[in-house]
Length: 236
Length: 162
Image (cartoon, rainbow over all chains, first blue to last red; front, top):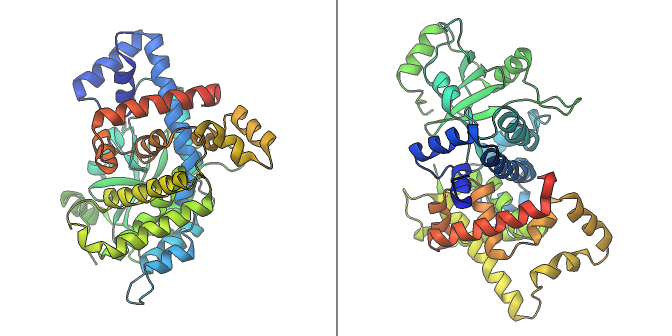
């Protein structure tokens, strides 16, 4: 192994510049010790993420929320909306999802490679790589036959964001455009088996239907226009 | 978005961060509450356009450190390696079993404060080294060395279960 432990850790933490990261990836293909070291680091990150993720999904206790709404002037409708959304999708367990993504997808397939379609940014799961590219540019109405990521519906959610359902084979879900990124809002897992599985297209469609405004999904023209405008949501 | 609304948005993440620092859910929420109160009071010091989340994490972390130091002065400070045993009190066997099983809470509780906060910021909250260094007010080199030590301890304690 030609990389010191600090460099391997920095690689897993996404701290290396592109060329160095690519060099590590290449070397890991031929160096089982390096690959194992990377997998060990990823496993720890996954373990911690899975352990702490459910806390951020708990309803925020009243005593904390009232601090920010005590003078009566503050609009808590945002919090209320989130609360409503959360209970609506009670079956979705982010901790388990984070664990499956970190352990199943990355380690199962290629332990040394970055989880190409998913990144964690300040605790949020966001689309990256090929998935982000597809969500950015691919039109549901005009998809290549062999596209790895299939786009389902595009719609506006009740917070005014553009959201798109997708299926990439390994992962299906809904990404919403937030702050210039596709934040992964919905993916589902089987409660019965405990193993990660992709949400069925029926479940996703139902979830999308529950999230979208009364206007329904975007038609082909509206979808194209939204894409050409960079998915920037006109603020309500 | 209004200041208070942005804070409301941050609360779920802040609670998670606090849970990693404090030893139980109740004191974690106490810490969050103190942080929000401090933020509302010092709102004027936050510069619009800078990141509110980093500012809030810094406030939370500083309050926690203050509390830990105050507890230390009162003589209530528990040496880290005894902490697990101390918490155990009425269920030492259970906690020991937790540590053996590779329980994350038990493993985190064994980390020194300065390693635990770095582990939370980088490995759980996903901050870049530079951002974590800014939040903590230490050089990046300090972040990476503390992170490396914390990581090794956690990997050792969590073992194969990690």
